[in-house]
Image (cartoon, rainbow, N blue to C red; front, side, top):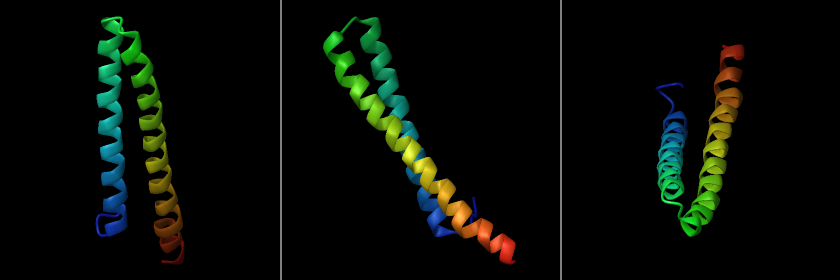
Length: 77
């Protein structure tokens, strides 16, 4: 992460938010499993997958930005 890059800061914050959301849903899913709440489990499984996908996409965006912006700058540097 380039601490002087506003895009890096934004992308990493989005990734952190997505990670926190994913962890929170996984925790709710675990509670639903312990309570044998099938309805909640079905709903939370879908939400967990969406949260996981969002987290993955955020991480990809970070990696692409770093590669396309900072790796190129380092090579040209």
